[in-house]
View 1 (tube, rainbow, N blue to C red):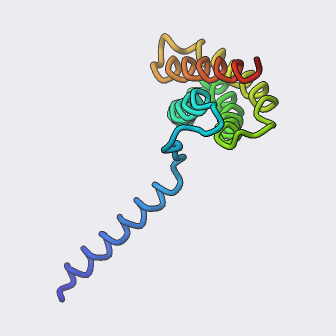
View 2: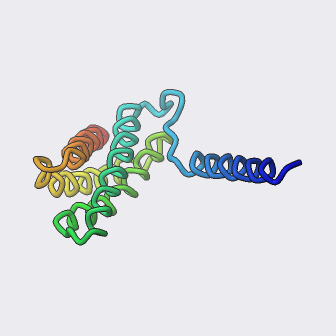
Amino acid sequence: MQRRDVMLGAVGAAAVGMAMRARAAAPAAPAAPSASGHQALVDAAFACIKVGQACQQHCLSLLSKGDTSLAECASTIAAMLPAVEAVAQLAVQGSPRLKAMAAVCAQLCRDCEKACRKHEAHHAICKACADSCAACAAECDKVQA
C-alpha cells in the first residue's frame, strides 16, 4: 500500500464523517402528513426555519464585515427560530400546548417580518424571510382561532 492510497482513504473517511454529521444536524421535515391535523402549520414552520437560517447567515456575514444595518434582523431571527422550531414540534405531536405557543410564535414571526421588510428592496433573502414569517404567523393564527 502506498502513502498516497493511505492519504486518499483518510480523506474519504473524513468526508463521509463530515457528511454524516451535517445530515444529523439538519432539521428534518416529517416524511408523512401530520396525524395531528396541523400539516399546513408544520409545512409553514419548516419553510420559515429554512429561510430564516439562510437570512440569519446573511446577516451574520454582513455583521462580520462591519455592516451593522442588519443587526435588528439578526436579533429578531435569533428570537424567532427557536419559537418556530417549538411550534413545528408541538404541531407534529398534536400537543395541547400548541395554541399557546402558536400565539407567541406568531408575534415573534411578525417582529422578524417587520425587521426584514425594511431591507427587502436591497436583500432578496430579507424579502424571502419576511414572506416566510408572514406565512408562518398566518398559520399560527389559524391554530388560535
